[in-house]
Image (cartoon, rainbow, N blue to C red; front, side, top):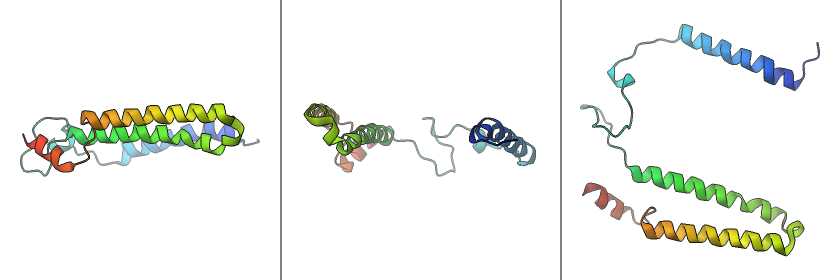
Length: 127
């Protein structure tokens, strides 16, 4: 039998995944307590006596905005590599894309979604 990469991908990998999941279910210790079953960072009051604190949504927003802008900047790398092939039209499209990206970034800073001063965020969260 000739083992090809497609055979490994579609036959052996799913069998291995199911086997490892079955081993986990059979051999893992299942001892849930109240802390393990409770929802984590769900916005409710934290459990007394633990070190959990309420979740600041500001950090989540900054992370999402970073991800969006990081992926958009990543789209500029193919333009930089193929700049001789895309000529002036491709360069002008990249400049328009970069201008729109910069305007969006400035608007997000202006709206307060991204705070350049962490002290302002801390003051607003304490109020």
